[in-house]
Amino acid sequence: MSVVQETLQVRGIRCERCMARLAKVLDGHAGLESANANFQGEVTLVYDDTVTTREALVHDLQRGGFRELAA
Image 1 (tube, rainbow, N blue to C red):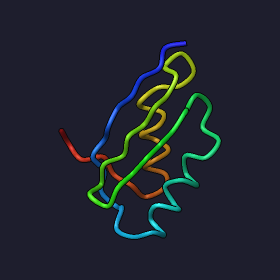
Image 2 (cartoon, rainbow, N blue to C red):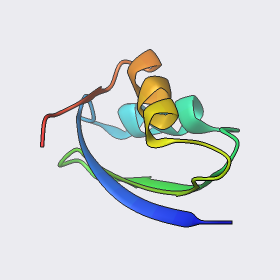
Image 3 (cartoon, one colour):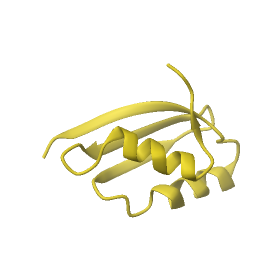
Image 4 (spheres, helix red, strand yellow):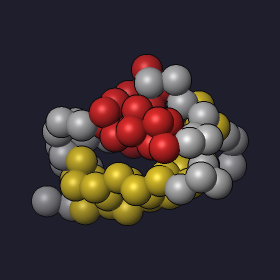
């Protein structure tokens, strides 16, 4: 098991409902240990990179209407 912690900057987090939607989108994602977000659009993901990938997590975020901002 290789645990990775990564913080992404995303667009679309403006309120408590947005936070709940983000949690619902990521709920049950295999390999995701935790996800924390704030109203500045920072989402910190902790995941097992032998089970999932950054790209798969970003894909789920995009399905939920969130967009990653370019670094």
